[in-house]
Length: 239
Image 1 (spheres, one colour):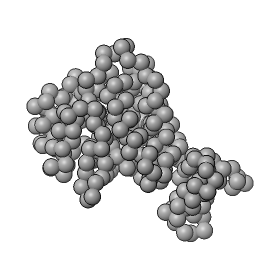
Image 2 (tube, rainbow, N blue to C red):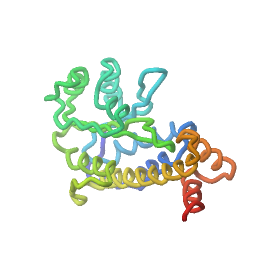
Image 3 (tube, helix red, strand yellow):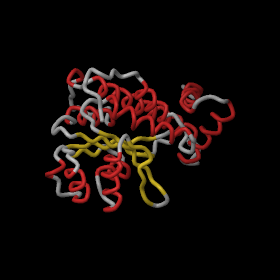
Image 4 (spheres, one colour):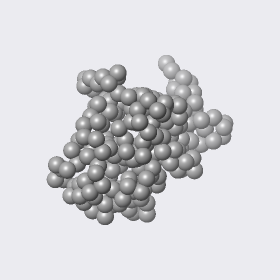
C-alpha cells in the first residue's frame, strides 16, 4: 500500500529508471530489472496510487512482469483473460489509456468488475519504450480514490505529445507525480534523439531496423551507451 503524501519523498530513482529504459537496447537483460523497479517506485512514490504493475508481451500473450501487490496482478489478469483492457490498449496502441471512473466504463467489463470488487475507482496505463522506440511494456497505476489521477493523466498525455497545447498544473501534482512526469518527458526526448540517429544511419535506404542495429553495434563496440552513441552520430553528421 502507498505511504501517505509527504511521508515518502521521491529519490529521483523513478526518473532515472525511466531515462535508463529509454536508452537501453530492447534485447538487454537490464530491461526486466528496470521494469520491476519502475513498478515498485511508482506505487511507493505517487501518492494517489494504491498499487502498480507492469504488463509485457509473453509468448504470444501477455504477462505481469512486475507488481507492487497481488491486487494489481489480479486486475491485470482479468484483462489478459478478456484480451482487452487499458493495460493492453496502452501496450498495443502506444498511447496512455486512462479510466477516470472504472465503475462506469462499459468497454472492458472484465477489468471493470474485477477492479470495482477490489475497491479501485480509477486507473492510468502508460506505454514504456526501450532503445528502439517501440513500446515494450505498460505501467499500470491503480487508485481507490476517484479523480485523483486526473491531473497526472493530463501531464502524462502532454509528456507523450510535446507539441500538445494542453496545459497541466505542475504545482497541482504531488512530488511522485512530478517525478514520473519528468521521467517521461526526458524519455520522450531521448527517444526523439535516438530516432534521429537511426534516420541518419539508414539514410542509404536500408531502413530503420537496419539503422537501429548499426547504432546498437556501434554502442557495443565502443562500450558507450546507446544514448551517447546516438548523440555522437548526430554530431558527426551536422552540416
